[in-house]
Amino acid sequence: MPDSYRLYYWPQIQGRGEFVRLALEAGGADYIDVARRSGKRGGGSAAIMKVLEGGDPHAPFAPPFLELDGELISQTANILAFLGPRLGLVPADERSRRRVQQLQLLVADFVAEAHDTHHPLATSLRYEEQKPAARKNAKAFTTLRMTKYLGYFERVLARNPDGAQWLVGDSLSYVDLSLFQVVAGLRFAFPSAMKKLEPAYPHVVALAARVAALPRIARYLKSKRRIAFNQSGIFRHYAELDR
Ligand SMILES: N[C@@H](CCC(=O)N[C@@H](CS)C(=O)NCC(=O)O)C(=O)O
Image (cartoon, rainbow, N blue to C red; front, side):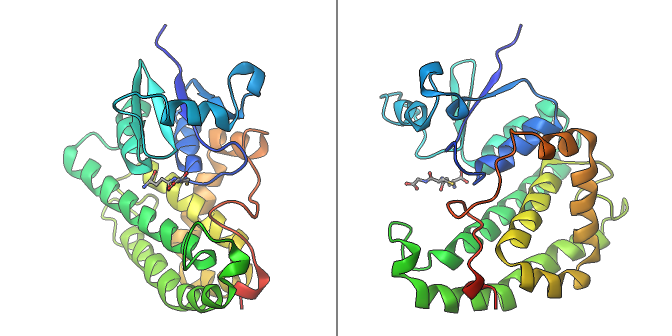
């Protein structure tokens, strides 16, 4: 029996761990969400800290990270590039795989900017300590950056020579799952901005619906394994930032 994948991510939030969870779920992988186990069963944030501070020469800088057969693999996009071929979530040819990864790195940039709307000055400061800057940042994000990123993904889909169903080629890849997650996060964080913007990005909206309807993903989204969006994650809803 091969080992189960062991995912390590903060147990209270979807965060960047969610991009990995979605791939594991869509690929039907056998995995353990280590930190979501009880402390008694070796879970909780302590499980993450134990690895980070345990002295392994390849210990990651931060979660999410994946453990398999004693190897620790970190960086969200890198974890997905590792999982993609194993879980059937990338096309077979190298060129397409590079394109999937390029788009995944763009998702990472998009996610970092979404995070910075509520933490524009410093991640270490509380939101309440950076509210005026957050307002300015969120305004620029919702009017200029969201439109630029969503517009780009819309064009990638519309111009896909294999049809506009998926971002690369003619089948689902991990970056489709990630774009779904970004759309879900933006809907939670900026419902009013998204309501206005969505009609301009019909292919992106359709892709998000297509991913949500995949049988394994639909089951996962209804399950307890899917943590609800909340005010501690990357995507947070502050009404004053969604004007
Ligand atoms: N580039 C990394 C970023 C990892 C990251 O920022 N992890 C956050 C949670 S989403 C964290 O715990 N960071 C701790 C820190 O930066 O000190 C990735 O994509 O995985």
